[in-house]
Amino acid sequence: MMRAPVLDADEAAAEIRLAAALAGPVAALGLAGALVAWRSALGVANVGFVMMLVVLAAGATGGRAAGVLTAVVAALAFNLFHTQPYLSLAVAARQDAISVGVLAAAGAVVGEVGARSGQRKRAQQRLQAAQRDVDAVLRAVADGAGTEEAWPLLQRCVRTHVPAGACTFQRHTETAGTPDDELARTYVVPVIGDGALLGHLLVTLDTVRPNGAQSELLQRSASLLALAIHRDGTVAEQLR
Image (cartoon, rainbow, N blue to C red; front, side, top):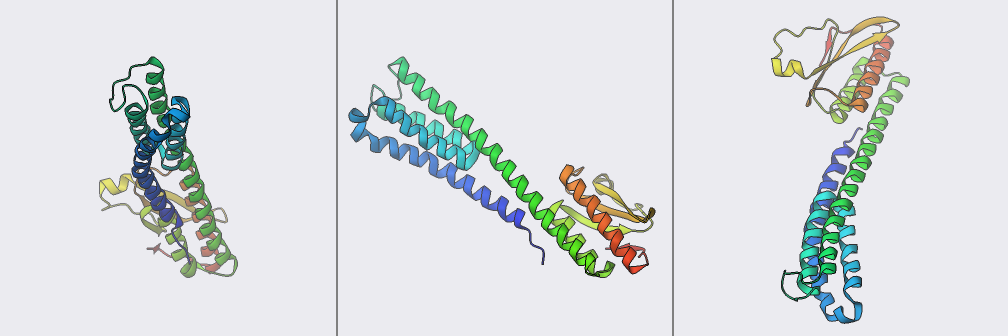
């Protein structure tokens, strides 16, 4: 049975980013206040280093938004509690001003790195999930599944991983009566078996065109459908 783990992963990632964006600033403010008691013993540089760790953790966990928000709050809190004059946002020393600026910049940089890393990880998860589902269809066809059994699996796979609003097969492609906005998003993939054109896979996309990985998945789906049709020995006029 096919699942949609990509959607779950994206939702979980969004929740983590939101949690980091909320928790990071609170942690930075609370830590800055708590370190006041050790301000003299630690020194401004060490306090700044500890605050930097909070910013780095928030940015790496929550991405750019969490990193920037935490950095701004950390810089303001550091300035408020640990640079003279205390309990004022005014900065008296040049070195302190540099420390505040470094905190803010670090949050932005690490947040961007964290966001890009998260995007790459989720893209890899999408590829792995799509590969598992395509392999499941391939195993079904190899075990003797014909069009009637393979088509629902293929359709579900395409609609899960492309994603698409509709996925149909037509032996003789007919687009008359299709709304213009839907027609512009319809991606047509030839279904070819034994060198002969069997028909076309018509996929109504949520976007104008699929990306490279999605296009490859559609091509593989068309090839698997051709195998299932070949097993049946007959070609349906259409599959919906």
